Image 1: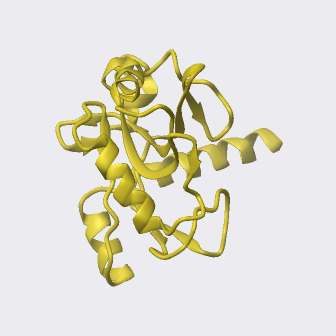
Image 2: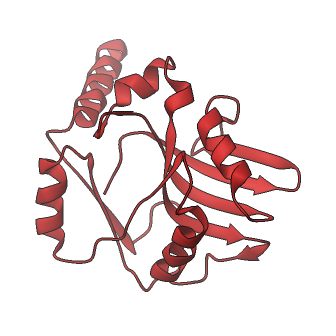
Length: 179
């Protein structure tokens, strides 16, 4: 599933805990629930790839996340494990990394495990759209981790999701300013 939040790398080392966005901003002071959950993990060091999310009931709520009024409620939807106790896991297959991630975070409050769904892409996409997700990210279960845009995974966005309207609004705003 593709979540509508802020992409985060959550890292714990001997020096402390950091939450870093895709753009390089440090959100460690914003999301106390995530920082607290990372601190309680029974590990020496860890690096988790995920999405900072806010929810209203079971539904994703980007406006709530964006408002900053609910920073203490923001959870990490964790979809990959890049490092554990000093061991770089990026070379392992996705399913092996997710298996280890689940073992480490399964009882955490503030970190949600994002399962890998195997099956027919169009069927999963239709179901994701019906449930209100931003779309899906299709990854090969047997492949190592690769950051950035790559040919081994595919992002498919829900055209009816509010995130698409935000993109269109921003594009239109830029177009008007350019005139």
